[in-house]
Image (cartoon, rainbow, N blue to C red; front, top):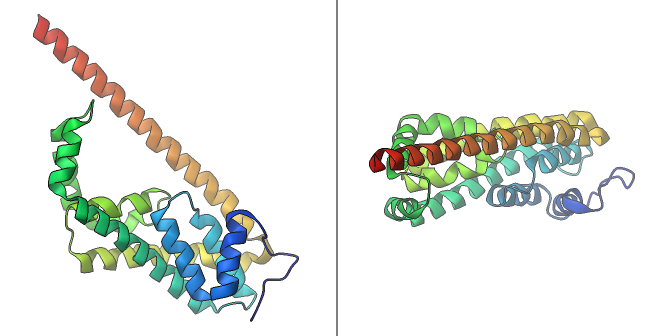
Length: 218
């Protein structure tokens, strides 16, 4: 059984947890970590993937194993979320949406039409966007995107994302944390942009509702 060099081995936090999985289970451990990362987005792939690449560089697992199992883990986690969306269903989604404040059913209908038109691109490119790569699986399930199509574009997009981060960790060696540092900044930027977009959308919706009420009063 191989082990990480003690001088470079993370011993705490998410990195320590991921290290333990890879050290104990090898490639399947990395796949399990990424599957869980898909289900629970707060688990950062920008730590797990470079660390897996570092493990491959140290001979703990092969580079092929690192890429194969992490991509398989991405697909398994994505399919689990897809199933949740499929079980929730379109009718329940519309019923829930209709009860939410500040939104209209027409907004959901527009989103549905957009997804039906651009769903493949959304799945493919969404796998490379922090946070969004997990959430995009749910509407795919709700809209009943054909499962083989969903899996194909999930695997293609996931492989590219995984390849870049695993290879970065493989090449950087014990400096693999640099990947997490820079990709982590990207994740925060994306999160801020998403929150800002939501704030703008809600603000516009509130103003529209107020104007509609004033118009009715007049």
